[in-house]
Length: 316
Image: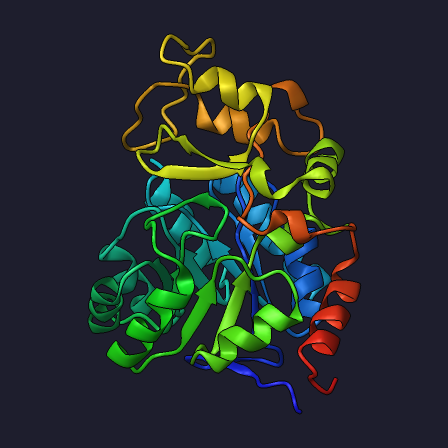
């Protein structure tokens, strides 16, 4: 069976796979370019970066690949507008965004002729996104890693969204291998977004400890935390997670005002930065999807794509 392409506005990806924009600094130019070089859509996570850093990452990714490169910025961050506008000025191929909903980004995208793809968790929000000018929607269920907007599984939400909109629909959450890819396409999705599998790649900027925790994870090691963002976050259990979840825990780092609204419980930016290469593993928050226990080895992006195509029984 021939592998279907993924069309979003004027863009066509040879393979229907978007790499998740995993912040902070897990998804950088190296990972995004590697995915784009395999025919997917590579994504740089702009959340937590300065405008200058994001500009440098975009330029580096373009040097490393002529494929499709996107930028993901969480609506919850205080620099949301500046980061999105900087990516648009750099002529990024598309913008993705979740953890809230911005009406303004559709205007900015239209003015720049760059597709805007919001991450949604309901048919109602997908319909609104299409009316505002979304080029596609990513439908994310409770299986996904990081900040979640629903407690419902993707397989229940996706058919509802598919029947409610006419733009491309991308399934996200719990997609680890080619069997998951094929099953999601059979549900009516035009493509998939995969984060956890690519976080466990050689090109990922996650720390060695982060990747080791992925490989050692068991089914019961995934938990929901109360993120300062105001949304539940899905992560691996750890001593640090146990500490910040205690009622009497108080933050011991200065606030850098990275979020529009913050509970001040702990510094989410500091915790996520510590999950990157060079961070402090003892103070790291390791976001992951529900199915992280199914990942058994760290592979190159090229090998991940080869496995996906083989398992999905797609011709390459």
